[in-house]
Image 1 (cartoon, rainbow, N blue to C red):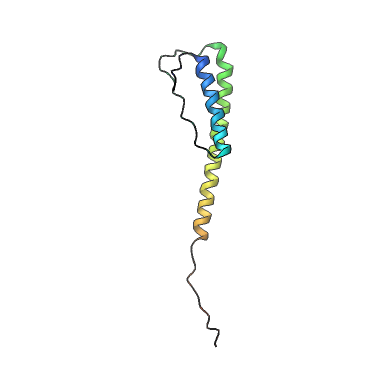
Image 2 (cartoon, rainbow, N blue to C red; image 1 turned 30 degrees about the horizontal axis):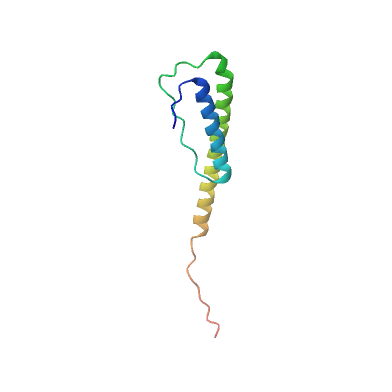
Length: 96
């Protein structure tokens, strides 16, 4: 991973990773590594605030979609587990 030193670089990387997460979710691939925010980057410049806020909204949408899919998978697993409870075998003597 390269070192990000500017806010524009960091936001570019975050947008790219969010796109990679969306593709991974769509295609069933492993998600990319998280972005590591440098501790010495300083405050977000005012002129980048709108872009950062859009990225935050998009990130929260992605998180909600991941949570929705996770819940759906857990529900499906529970349904399979309940339907897999096997009934004891019953035999009918057809000779009678």
